[in-house]
Structure formats: structure tokens, C-alpha cells
Image (spheres, rainbow, N blue to C red):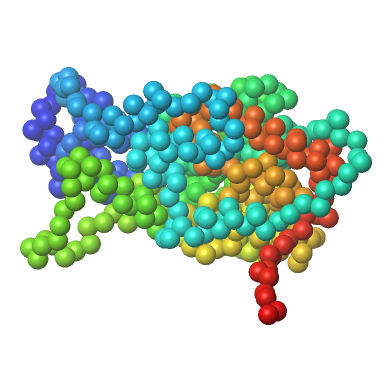
Length: 477
């Protein structure tokens, strides 16, 4: 195997593109158009060492997809004592002072801790939402418009919060909604979630694994316990053959359902994430650049942010008439549609014969001013209650409390998905943090069910919830 010098590799940064990963040299020129994150993500490291971004965004086996001739040889690794960035030093110090888990009382507590201990890059990516982040805030606030009408004098010493999701047992009416790049927060990434949500066969929560996870779906499947159910969140490639290979591989790996994502065909404008590199640069240099007339006038911002380029090859021409029959023809797995945002599309999904829908606006990360999912669920219950008998309905977005889960279940949701809370928890405390989130939600859900007079999930009915729009008192004086 040929040995190369840094200077030789650096020369291949224009017409040809060579990169270094873990001391190995690769010619990725022909792979650029096929890269899921778009060619620019690789070109940024042309002729350079790309180990750090590779480890952050890719599974270790990702290089196996390159042809053997792309591996050109090795480069001598010179051990360099890299100085820590100011942000790395801050994170290291913050982890030393984080509170013990018993002091984490709720999901908001966990988020506060995560904000302190996560890198600025991880926090910006996980917490960011579209544009002015109004939709994200309204996802949360929308739950405050729904109040309970509890029933009393009902036996609730026995209380069972378990349910099934697409036929698979779940200890609680919740699941892990698909969320990407868990390794930004912790070296073990998604495996922390896989292990943390399963304590026994009767105490398991289902994980939906993202197409854009920082570990491969095979690695995550291997980390699962025997009998543990995993679902797969599919971002469909525009090339049907590429998409079909992915679906068949996922099915072979043992995943139990496909969640076709339909609300993220282009990248949302997540400005908090887009600004992140500038904040880190300014922190290191001790100040911000200032305008001068000599500066180029072209827009130098990376509007795709950390992961926006991952949608570059996604199918923007999906349709009810073509895509659902195509997906049905290549898999026997249950099909759920993730990203339904109105009653009309919920009806079309039922007519298309899918098994489930997830009412979601992508955590407020895509289209600003899309309705909060709990409001869409309420409208669906009022306008087309028949849909609930034709497929399973789930929601995600804005859930912080067990009472939020119960409101959704009362209105007809089979289960509720959470994404950010699990990313925050695993980033702050690893696997133990994920288990803590489950414990918190179980305590809140069981207490809420008892106070509602509902000993089982089937006792959570629409008449236990009322939507309230508080009106200000108007003085008659």
C-alpha cells in the first residue's frame, strides 16, 4: 500500500478530491455526486484530514461503500498535541459540575443541564428551529390550551400505562421519534438511546431510527436486545433503486416498520444552527469581523447548516398516487407517514391504505407557522373522527410533561413521539440519562392517569379533555 505525504494529498483539492480519514488516504472524486450530504460537505476538506467530521456524521462502516480502488494508501500519523478550543474546555468543565440524576425532576431540568454541557455545535443543531422559531415555541404552548375534565371515585390502585404501537408492546404510550446525529452529543450516539429505553421485555419503549443517524442502522440493530422493536425513519432517495436497496436492507436488519418522512424534502432555515460556526470562530479569535468595502459582497453563509445538505438527494416529487404503492410493492413492513400537518392529508393517508400517520411539523424545524401537531390532532378528532378507526395516529413536537402525553392520547393518539429530550439526555448523561427520561415520564403519566380516573389507556377518552381559549376580562366601566 502506497504511503503519501501531507503535501501530496493537499495537491488534490480542485480537479480531484482526496481526503484523509484515520491516517488513510481516499480518492472520493467520483463519489462526490452520490454523497448523501452533498458534494460541498466533502469538498470543504479536499486535500485535508476529514477524520473529525467523518466520525461526527458517519458510521464507521460508511467507508465500505467506496470501491476498493478509492483507498489509495496511508499517510504517516504525526501525533500532535492539539490545544483545546475554548468551547471544548467549557464543555469539559461543565461535565464536572453537572448535578446528580436524582436532582433531574422533569424534562425541562434535563434540557437546562444539556444546554450547559453540550458543545455549542451540538446545542445549536439540536435546539434550532425554523426562522424565528415561533412554530417550535407554539408546539409547546399549544398544550396549555387543553385542560382536563377529571373523573373521580373510580378505582385506580391498578394502573396500566402500557399500549401497543403497530402491534408491538410499549410500556408507555410514547416512543423515540427519529432524530439525527446523536454522536454530536455523546461518542456512543444512538446506541445510548437504544440501550437506555430497554430495561426488560415488559419495560421497553420503541425507538425510531433516523436515516441520518450518526451510526449505521445495522450498528444500532446489533446494539438492541433480543425482542426489542426498532422502527426506521426513511428519507426517500430520489432514485427509486437506491431507496429500494435501503428499505430492503433495513428490513433484513430486523426493523419492524417504515416511517416515510414527507415534511423535509428541503432543508428548513435553522438560523441558530447556521450562526454556530461564526460564534465559535469569534470566540476563538476574541472578536467579530467588521465590514469593509473590500470584502466580497457574495453571501458567504452556509444556509444548509449542520445537516441541511443531507436532504440534497431526497425525493421532492413524492405523491400519494405513486410513492405509497411503490413502497408497498417493495416491503411487507407496516408503513407510517411522518409529517402530516393537516386534516386533508390525514384523510388521504387513510385512503392510501397506510398503517399509521405521525402528525408532525418536524419539531418546528421545517415550515414556520405550520400548525402545532396537538391542534391538528384536535381538528382531526372534530372533523374526521372516522380516520382513527382506519389507521393509528401519533403526534410529536412540544411534549414536555406526562400530562402532554395524556392530552394527546385522550384525543385519539395511539402514542406520542419525543426527539429532542432523548438527544439532550444522552448528551448529558449517556444511557443513564435516557433511562431517567423514561422514569420521569412514567411517573408523570401514571400519576396523571390516576388523577383522571383512567386506570388503563383505553379509559383515556376525548370527553376528558376540553380545548380552552382564555379570554381577557373586559371592564364594563
